[in-house]
Length: 294
Image (tube, rainbow, N blue to C red; front, side, top):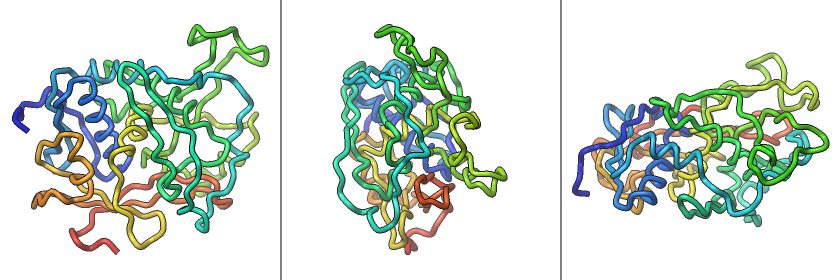
């Protein structure tokens, strides 16, 4: 923690858990590209700063070009409405998961979603396909990447130059996000739009905007940085920090263990967003008093 001059500055909403953990993912990638990168919050947690040898555009470009170990572009008729239930009785169960492995320009293995209480997707949803779609949608030139929003579509084999167009279709379908971004989660209930989009037949699926940078980087950030679980089901607490930290210190920083008197804590819920308890989403966080985490 020697160089306090930030080379990267990103606007962030600290009450959005997806954006918060996306900042952790941003620092994770920065350190793997330029070892020794440090990150911290300033301006009441509304800006995330990184001191590194690279720029924001270079970092986002690297994220957008991540190469996966396996071929995740095999097309199928995967349907979100066929997902298995994630009810409260088995949320804490240990299950085998298929990891996502990056091989270039950084090497990274992601498999944190053994914790079902923190995982918002379920059942037949293919996490690697979602991650691929989100990372390819990243705009490297965005000056406010955590606010980039658009309809994200799947990545087809011919787009990757690894195969011919599917005989079934050659037009990519909209791809649902992980639902890390609380702006999506806060408006995901059927009462919010007058119907439940996830229960509609495929032909009537409504394309919805996602925040691809938040979705992809949050997936990365949660590998090292887990929020503190509370006594309430699927509710967690995290802390901002103002002391520049290497990624190795992020678990302590995120859980408020740095002894930082300026740290601010927030509580959020990974809430069910359908009556069938199949899908969850990160809801907006609320500030809480330090030490008051029931």
